[in-house]
Image 1 (cartoon, rainbow, N blue to C red):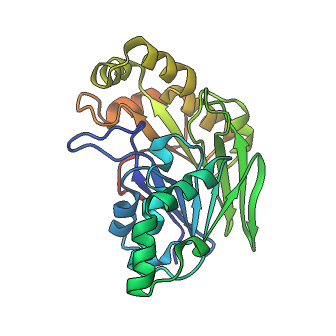
Image 2 (cartoon, one colour):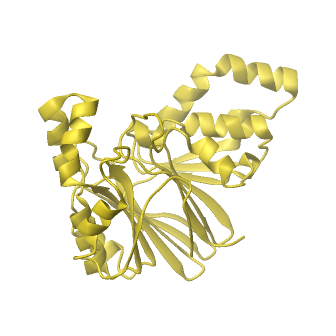
Length: 283
């Protein structure tokens, strides 16, 4: 099992549009484990298209409970179960994740009970353990370690950057956050920093297409980071690679990879990757 990061969904926000990317989800393969980071709409299909069998689902981490990060949590696990999943899956998420999972089970109770009785499937609820986490060490298993840092994503209080270390590699996921200087220390000398990013000149586009006018703009500016902010964190942290993800806007043809690179390369001296769905980065 090679060490790799695959971006499954790279747009910021829950809306999807024709020809555009999916909301946030990623697959990290490290230290012999497959870790799904966030479960936005499209994660199940995205995983299958990497060549992974959903029966191999192992660990899931949710950074926060905005829908573009958690909407397909239950459907992913259920789809894996209908594919033949028969071993335990552990979900690590912020406070409230257990309620999301139990609510999903309640909503699909008829289907789940029918398939257990009619198709001989194992009890789905008993296969899944949800562990709610806060700042600090989330998981230690052999040389694999996952640590969480609370970031600044108002009005969401329980939103966490994640640092995953194993096999001599470190990958940090910013989650959704306004510019947050402590993230530079958290990501110090990481091999990869996956950081959310906005283009200032793209805000008019996203507000115009989504609606909500000035209120949406206020949220975006208060709760998210511009690409230049992400570059500053990456430069201060001394990371090897900056991967721009959760892109806003991600589905406007007026903004290309060149716009993103122009925003970050004057600030960050390392390698820059502009996220796109299905992109795999070897570690």
